[in-house]
Length: 424
Image (cartoon, rainbow, N blue to C red; front, top):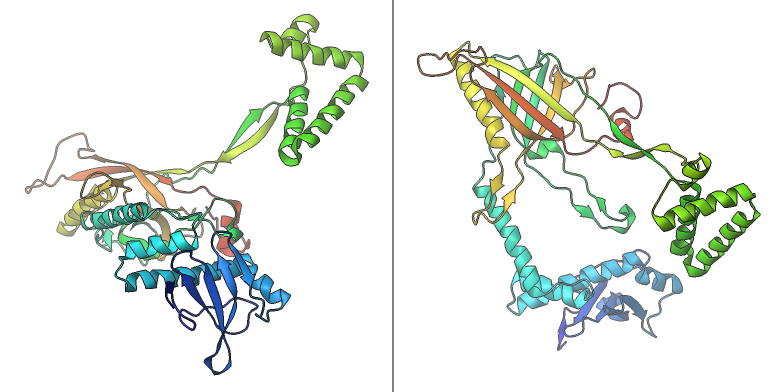
């Protein structure tokens, strides 16, 4: 068909509630998409059109569709399936005509989702940025030893140890699907798939964790409460609802005792002259501020560790040097080839292990950022080295902080509330 992308029978797709295979044919100028259904003997019937300017599906007069089938094609899920198939068809048509991948993507977005489409230049710029950030991985180190340990003969399978997993940092994507709520965020992938190196050390003394949330005092006097009710009525019900609420509040004031009216008058007087203590100055009283401690948000837990590393063998000496390098390079900021952008350092998953499994009697720790790493090269107070220059001992101090707060349901996910582990 001239001036179209695709043909009946190509790029098949389905819509729940519609029997049979569907296929799109897209107008190359308007993006209006004709939906065909394959019938017997490879005959194709036009069911109707999707108009990207309105975002709606319109059934053909002779489509034979029932009301339920029209509803299925007009639903959010049906429209989404149509748009996806139309975008694929358009992109293929552009590439077949010699267009680039970026041009094909931009054209399909512009035709099929014009209200949310971005110009081709913006798409190309976005693709260029993604390529540069991807290229930066060639400049940074993503491969570290899988099993560094101190001491070098540490019996990981039989001793209780602390394990530091270095991870490739992965940001959380904003999830815009309708069933996930406004502005919700996706989950990071499992840390085992992002591990790029490990260090095993004996569990040090003084380990602890502190779980906390933020609460703060807040006040709302009767006048503020009334104003809040009026504002809420206007926002949720419009001006008429706000006017009704204001009238009701005014009636309440008129029906109250003279003392209450005097107090309210004092509040308005204070507001007018910029003073807040009129009632206290004249009557020795204040309106009840209704002070209350209110929840204001979670916090992110910090974790500090200190280890003293003293070489007792040649193997220990090599392990110590590599362990210090492991943390120093792993926490270092990454940069792109142009040096225009900086990327987040690697992150860490910390585990207390008992017989090479999560320790059931010590807290769990979520993915962390290594915020500082300090090396004391003379922990004994004197400069002492071996013949080859290796320091006789090192003391390393690390400060981590979790990337995400702890939530109530995080505990339930561990053991379905059977209380078999301490949890976070």
